[in-house]
Amino acid sequence: MEGNVRRTAFWVASALLGCAHPVRGTIGSGSSTTGVGGATSAIAASSTGSLGPPDPAPADPDPSFYPNGPDPTVSVSPQSNAETESSILYAPTTLPVVVTWKAEPVVGPSFVGYALSTDGLTFGGPQVLPTPTGEAAREPTLGWTGFTVDIAWLAFDSNGGTDANTHIYAADLAPGASAFGAPTEVTNPADLGTTYSSPRQLLGAGPAIITYAYRNQGDSGIVASSRLADGTWQRKVLAHSDPAQATLELPTGTWDGTVSSFNIAYIVRQAASNALAVHLLHGDGIGGWQDSVVSLPNEPVASVTPGVITPGITANAPGSTEHVWVSYGLATNSGNPQPAATLSDIRLAESEDGGVTFPIRKSAQATNVGPVSASPSFTSGLGGAMDLVYYAGAGEGDAAASLAWARDYGFSGFLAMPKVAAAPVVFEQNPSASSWLGDMIGVSSSPFRLYVSYVDNTSGASHIRVHRVRTI
Image (tube, rainbow, N blue to C red; front, top):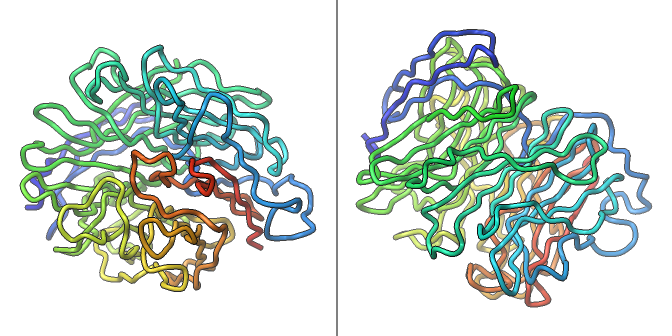
């Protein structure tokens, strides 16, 4: 049994789903090792685009790029020296586009900045999310509930020299508002002995659901937190493991608002060998859930967040022909993958039975843009398409690297030859360098365009630019 990952039961709140009964997990067959119960509500996520009316931005003389020169830089401010970890969201009922990032000042703790666009073309000046004094902020993630934009981020005590005292906060941007409101804490403020990481918002439609990883002395796992009507957060453990055996990391996924239809990919790290494997938690269509191992044995899985696409999510009942795609990276070093992993390949695994098995896999990385890659972001666009963006280059220090973009029109599982979306960038994978590419690329779509927030580090410091390309 891989990683000794334990199943858990998950109570479905009657206030959110209209039922009041526990949904019990069941272990999947074969190499399945984890269980998850039903969750509580649905949300939208920046990583996979948003439904809505046509993009209100004016027509471009050049249909692919910004009409008046290079992609705009949105993150530079006197408060910040370098910016990475970007997320972007198209949210037509609130503002067309919101972009956010982690900022590193010359002095003091990191913070989360953001910029707003009312036309999908130009952006206002950078603003700062409020975080309690003395806490550093990072890993912002955006979601859209249909009426408000949700942002969640990780914060930790920067004065203690450790990430042990961590918190995850969330805030809302209401329609017509010019700034996010006051933050609320998603995690338990009284729990000071647990380290949290990797907040992500699930794709869906409804109240926010935020997933994240946790670890303490005796437990490691994946949590889903849903916001209740009174603004407080309900927290439920989806899967957990003894950290002496394995830790569970980097969750991300999709959700359609029912108990039966969700898919959450995450990474299991073996304690003894440091080997990584990709898993998928998924509903089984009859009120239960299963866990499947996505990656192959002995693959050098990298420590990068997987991607999940489930077009037209339906109940994943036994015998379902529902397609699920999961992307993940393979490290160039086959031993112990590093946190900022340079990838030798990006794998695309396909399931034809609702996520139970993944018999189909192929390389999604093309050598025409470079032999190595970093920070892949896998997203479903509108109109029946899948998009993959990533940094590509010849290797560490390559000053002619690029932001690559590949699209699969029609969910066929075959990505077209990638195009250079933006260039040049410097292929810098040292997290302590001011020109680090970071480990997050933001991607979101309107009915007509794909928006990407990425790092331009050619000046010697990383700053966030926004690229948009017309897709139809």
